[in-house]
Each structure stands twice: as structure tokens, then as C-alpha cells.
Length: 321
Figure: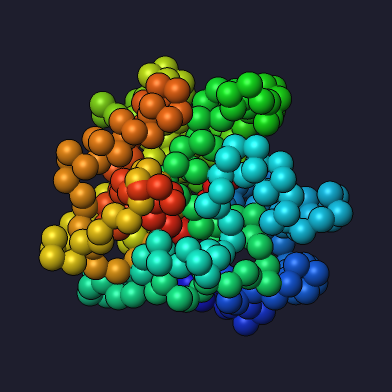
């Protein structure tokens, strides 16, 4: 259903609560965001149904208040720095903006691609409201480290980031049968929801098997951790609403890699092409070696693929839980 059709959607638009794709320029600071949000009525009684996004935004504010520090600082100290995620945050530093490609969005009517954000746009400065639901910018290597940590039940190398029971609860189906049925339009018939991640509950084809968990981001990214195959898959594109099947475009407009590692983030844009199979394979092999034999598939269509010493291309991450 298009944004703004329901009265509650129109009310959230009017209050600038950032309904729809991440827009760091729109929402107010956390205190004001909560004040505006609290003025709206409940859509459902708590526990009656599953809904995406807004609960995670509230959770980000609560984490900041409980930890007595900004949400972005909490994430950096507890998650990003221990995992070595040096290129992940709510904005890109000025010195790294050359690694942030534009991001495309298909026109709802024609399907033609238009630029949603350029390199000097929404993610070139810190947002007033660091959202717990989306808006991070990252790279393939950083996202891989996160996915590998959860695959390893909260451990990363010799360091424990999360306790095993917490990770197990995250990747376990937490929805009731009624909630799952109501969420099918969004999650699909073969998936359900844990805490911050979706998981495959029923086999559908060759690639998706029960036990896999992760998320397909609306900004054009996909992360899957597969416990059975001991594999982490990262797909990053620069086209919204098309994951996990990005469009191919003319090779004459493809981006050139500028760094030596394979890296990328979860949200991006502009006219780029999917790198060759050989380039994608090299990127995946290099990343897998760095992650101690993690089987990683970095199928970075458009701009994000292997690069060199400084780290890889950025892409906006729809949702790193």
C-alpha cells in the first residue's frame, strides 16, 4: 500500500517520523521524536500482531537512555569496535565520501531508476535521530564480521560479543501462528521473525533452507547466515526495493574499485553494473580468508566489490539488527 494512504501513515508523515525508506535528514532528535510518536494512537494492542520497523526505532531510544550515552556511541563501543567494523556508522566521514556511491530507486509507475541519494547527500553528515531500525552505512567486510559473529553464537575470534543464549533467542522463531499469518505479506510464506532478524522456517527451492537467518534490506542489500553450511552471504547493491535481485546496467557506467579489500554497506544508488563472476569470486575468497575460512559470497552488484587497502565501497545498510 502506498505511503500516506492510511490516516495513521498520513499522521506520521505530518509529524516527520520518517515513514518509508531511511531519510536521515527528516526525523527530529530522539526526545522530540518520542514526544511526537507518543501522540499517535496504537494500531494494535501489544502482542496482537507483528509489525516491522517502528519498534526498533523506539528500542534505539530506550538503549540510549538506559546506557546514558548516544545510541551511535553505544553501538560503536559494544558492537562495531570489538568486531573491527571501522567503516560502519550513521554517516560517512568527509575523507571517505569518495567511497560512497549514489543510490537509485525505481519509479513506482514506470520502473525507471532515479537517484535517491548522491555521495554528498543524506549520509554525508550525522543524523539528528540515529534510528535503531535502519540508516547505517557500512561495507561488505564490516557486515560480514557482524554476520559471522552471530553465526558463531556471539563470539568473534577469542572475544565474546553476545552471550550464546541471547543469540539463540534472536535466531529462534518468536511469532505465534496468528502473528506469522498476519506478517506473511511482508515476510513471505517461508519466513518468520526472532529478535531483530528473520529466519527461514520452510524450504523454498535450493538456496533457502530452514535455519538460515538474516535480513533483506529495502535499500538493496541481503545478509544470510547459514549454520548448516557454516556460511555467511552478503549481497550489496545500490538500488532500492530490488534486493535480492538487483538490475544489471551497462558496463560503461560501472564503478572502479579503489581499495584492496572486499567491503560494502547495506544501502546505495546510481548507474553501475554487476562485477564479473571472477571479480566477485576473488572478493569472496579474500574476505573468507580474512575471516578464517568463513565461506562468504560478496555478490556486490553496481558499485560495491573488491578494492584495496583503505577498505571497500560503502553502501547504505537497510538494517543491521
